[in-house]
Image 1: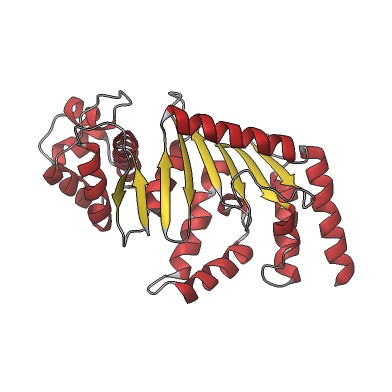
Image 2: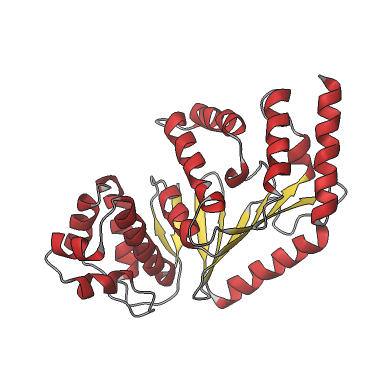
Amino acid sequence: MEAFLSREVARELIRYQLIHCRLLANKSQKEAGAAVGLSQPHYAQFESDQRNQRRPDQDKLEQLLRYFGVADRIPILSEVLEIARSSKPGGKHVIGPMINDVPLYFALEHYAASLDAYEPNVINGLLQTPAYARVLVEYSATLTPGFEPDKALDLRMERQDILLNRKPTPLTLTMFVEEAVLNRRTGDTDVMLGQLRHLLTLERRRNIRIRVVPQSHDLSPTGRRPLSMLRFTDDWRVGYTETPLSAYYYDTPAAIEQCGTIMGHLHHLALDADDSRRLIGAIVHRLESEK
């Protein structure tokens, strides 16, 4: 896969990756700085939310990633850093083509305040049961050489922690899902029943809203492609979409306005939360009667 992103998105990716990897390694800013010969205030500038924050050079980035125990991220983050240090704002730079951008996106998602997401083909990974997710990752393994389904499954389940256990506040999620996805048999009947019941449990949480787009709507504002829009506490917003071969990050005002317009259309097209719950419940009842 290749990923397209602007200089500004690259800078935010570097910042959030450093925060995320440091916390995963259970290291303080003081310890991270000392590992590369910097004071805590100097290192802290790498993680600053100021738009003119400092960025590490290539050597410092590699040293930090090794210190945090994630040396496998050096190739992709080196490409991101090169874009982040560019003197030209905006634009669409490409990294890849043979990269896995999942760690980049998941780190952004981990620190977002809210997420609006549309899924036309499957139930979003944040809401998947282990059984439903396993069907998908095992299928992906048949298409992608070197794909490790067990590792992918573990990562997908860990990702859900931001909805359920993140402190001080969990991610606020609004999920738009096509009715056809709920009726499609992914795995056997037991897998689908477990998944649909899981949705009914999750939607009771105050931070999760599930909205079903009825099958009666033939047109899709995204052309049946997934779309996510993340919002952060500093009001930075980024849109994200992907194809089987590429991922795209958008944060220009025009792109964010368009993402907002698309999400507005989805709010208009989708059933409200109560009707969505009733529809999911009706599908559960039908599957139960078929067993």
